[in-house]
Length: 115
Length: 500
Image (cartoon, rainbow over all chains, first blue to last red; front, side):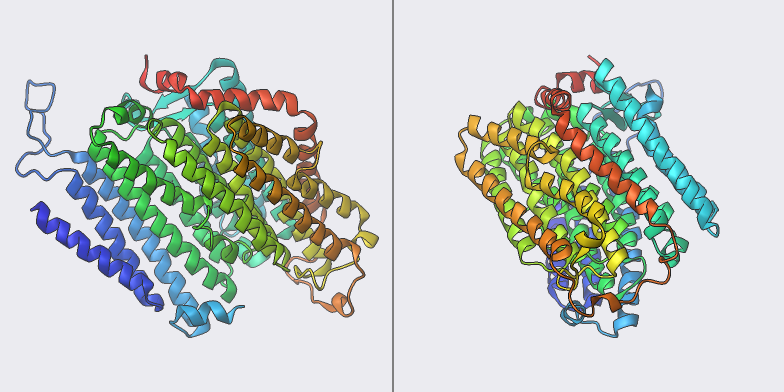
């Protein structure tokens, strides 16, 4: 399972970097979002994958029994996803606004226009 | 006691909420934000006094003992930074009262400003690396909006670069935080300090240190990751530029100093050498960039980069004197740099341009403003007895003690060029004859009718602080020295967070 996830992460990073290096503003957003997903998956994977082992303390015990899946990486990912959504929403609005004002989707044109 | 650590976060948050409720009443927002910033300033003073008396303070959120819960912790370094944040927030808001234009005020300038300061204070106070990421995001997203607010096309193009590069750095930061958790099983910075030496593969630790160096380095605008700063910092209104220049890059520097004194301590000699090289290159490229500029704000923006180099130099030398010098230099730089930005705003108010080629003759009509400019400008260049001199003196002495003569030479060389670029502003804006046709530049109708005094009071106050920091160097130096010793010997910090 780790192998599959590692390949998926690699593909996501590759695609994300490729998209960011394009000059199109729209692809920039897609690229950023792919990179965010790739990072979340990395945290998920390094947090060790375990199945059928919820982190629940059995009745009468005080600590977790040995095979349990760590909930913290998932909490981190959840927070990161929420933050990522917020920032992506902002980036989309920003780029839509830039497009409406300048009518270009090419970053080089946009950044040289102002100079 | 717990309250004192929470207040620097709760006050700006509360201010922002009340401002959002009073969305249509800009005057009320102004009053409330000003009051909130004054509260933050007072809290900062009380916090610094308490920590100076009683030592490092920590509190656990939600009653979970560290390392499980989220810790808020303040040592002298954090307290100094919170105090200066409150001070800058108050003065910049005062300045905004007469310099911010109405449309931006109506679209939430004041609540955004408060939220950004909440993020800054949170980043200074948190003792948990993931929480640090969250506070970074809080301050970043409000800074994104502040930068783009107004929607001029120059602003939009620069915002896109700023947003992209900061999202990339956040991704790297998140990744490093997640992997730190994977190898140590903790996110608490004090606990990480204890767990990191026990990690078997120190190579991974070094790799994570490098990832965090890149992530914070982008935010701190170090060489070669600084290019986003000069393209973005000169586009928004001057009070936004001023607060960005004062605080945002310094949060990056703060995070670098914190992780390299608390988390990554052992086996980092090569990293310190690397940081010194980066510091020298940052200073030199920044100042050469500045020398080439003819727009007042771009010139000052490049200067921010150059000055970051000095702070890194303190971290790279890594002795108690060097760290004390770095902290002193940060305080001095926040005050002097913000002041120069605010003065350039006053110049723009008087002449309606930032272009040095179109300015001129200001000293003849406004000699007092000329004097107000000279103090932070000379301080930045490092002339005694102003604050910049003492900061540089401490750093250079630390460099000589460590026998790192190259970095000392770079620091002195860059000082000369800083002086040159300040003299350039002085000559072009204040001394030379006013060029023909410059008076016909149109004023900004939204701002013009308001009193200029709210702009001058913060400038005068910051100038006074620069002079006082220079004249009272002795007691300030002792405070910085104690802060540096706390950084180098974190036993008190660990005791406060983890309980002994």
